Length: 540
Image (cartoon, rainbow, N blue to C red; front, side, top):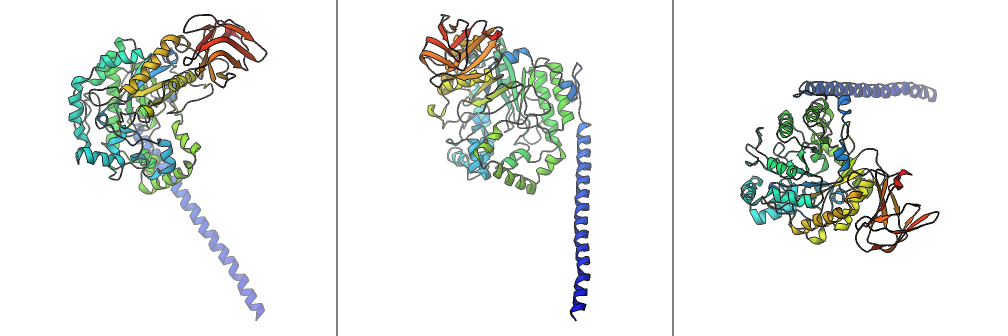
């Protein structure tokens, strides 16, 4: 009996193994089929999108990556170390967002509704769609159930008091070399009388040519003019409330939006010939159609520059637009952003196949970068005007000057944002004072910023712990002390023999050196960020 049972049990094992092998074989085959289907659909999507690529100009640049990569970084942009961005639109009328935290912190602590509770007042149109958000409560209290589009009337009424020349004078006095303005933010309202029809929000644009007036005002004063365009997000084409990063990045947009965005950006290029074409979030077409737009831009504005926020659409990104896929993405992001380091990683966008410069946001690089970069940041926690912010919420002028100098030392620039209030475009005193402070410092020390390049090293410290950054121009070396030192300034781990001068006064400074330090005797008087020039020292 035992012998027969043993034989039976032995015979069952091969059958079980065969079923397991057959199951995994079928699973592998299914996976292979799904991969082939995905690859096929992806290739078809790219082909269909790519055949709509249209080059509308003639010139040295063509709609392919190799051609675009031949575009050199214009000298004017490499020389310009300070610019101003303006977030201005319908959201400037209510001017509200909760304060007291940062977007990165919200990704850690409140990921599931971070997009409706962030400190960015320019996101008002989306935040009021979430009835439990602080912005929605504010809106009900002050505006009842009025739709966001109602702010158009108040904004346009305020324009009677807007003075673009006053803005331009203010930015010129602040020492800015260029000005970038939000031609169209994610709320979809265009700051120029666009001829491109929006099928979801007809006539949702300014009747007055705000872009043209501002471009003329800043260029008359010798500044460059740039446009910001929200290519990746437009809530007039996507009505669903955006609560998570998955919603923000992957809610599906159709061909109607792709055609709209391409047409609007081409219109901006032709009308205003912007010196900077600053796209945000991502781009709704595939790469071939994007490269055609950038080639048209370079052929129209040969010395123009594009930023790095042009991550293109694809069939895979469309799949991520499906709700289950977005849910899975968000679960992964919760894990990724569970640490401060992970949350901070979103501040520096990944570089795309083609860009002229990088754009870390509220972040900078502390080492010399091979590619030019531009830190963009608000003076406060919001880019758009936020009535909740007080002077204590705005970054202090010495800290902004330090970020400017640090950027220049590491092959970059600083672009500080102002958020004017209402259609009248009032730059609130707390923001204006920061611009005034930066301008005063640049008037005394601009030689150490504009037109400079990094030295062999970007930084050291003083004996009292102040950070020091270096820039060069020709054979001259500049040392910027990022603090308010008094008396002797002792530079650690650097030996300089050339006789320095205090740049703001032109007066010589007594120098003593050892094998590991350079002492500038009684060189500092407690003023912010003194600069010392060492003629000829950059040759070493």
